[in-house]
Image 1: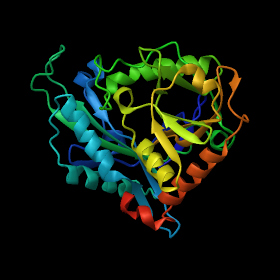
Image 2 (image 1 turned 180 degrees about the vertical axis):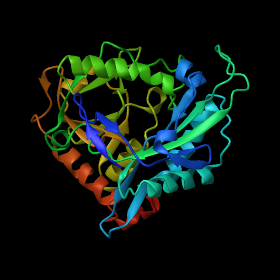
Image 3 (image 1 turned 180 degrees about the horizontal axis):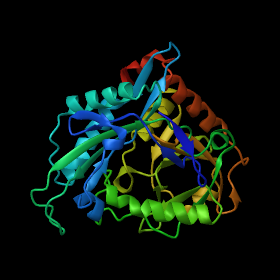
Length: 317
């Protein structure tokens, strides 16, 4: 499988590969097509996950927190009244089979549950619910330099979805138009990422990542009611507390971002990425801080298989 970088934001790429898992079978990449009247293509009712596989220090490959990701995929489908015709075990096996079929010892995996062709209009009726699993190589989502130096972020003019306007515990395809608009606005204004506020004006999350703030040695992050229950977010909270760090899930205001000692983002694609500037205001020392550096190191120790305490999070190929 090859990945060709395209112009634009970090992480932009043209992706090709050998095989895609579709509806229970591996098919050639070029044959993995969907009809033009696929319901999800028109109305956005679908759910997805982002999962990473890492090469471990002993030469093996391991998928990080596979069962948690697949569980959330099925929960997202349930939230959206989509009955997935595959079990949790079948989906986990599909992820591993897709990695093997593409000769990937590291990579990003995208399971996608979508509504197929049939009836049109807002009621999908008896249209089939389908499942695809795609895998490809993907480096640092916000860039190698951003992982060390930190990125620049902008508070978006777009608000995050209100909790009762969309259900925040599911990764629903159409919901990410909100993220796309915020991300594109940030990039066009010369920033690397967008930070969205909720409809009450409190800090919610970035376009595709959860957010953490450090102030006077305390790590703070917005509470779950308004943000996605990120798997990397939960990982970082557990790692920090295991190291004796104090973590609080508490509302954050925009100006608290500006006076933070450190900010960093977490997510499957972004992993643990520091933020050095928000809205032209330098954060802390203007570079990756000690807390972010420590948690970055702890995270990569885990996914590289160097920390046996968290072996339960690794599913080896």
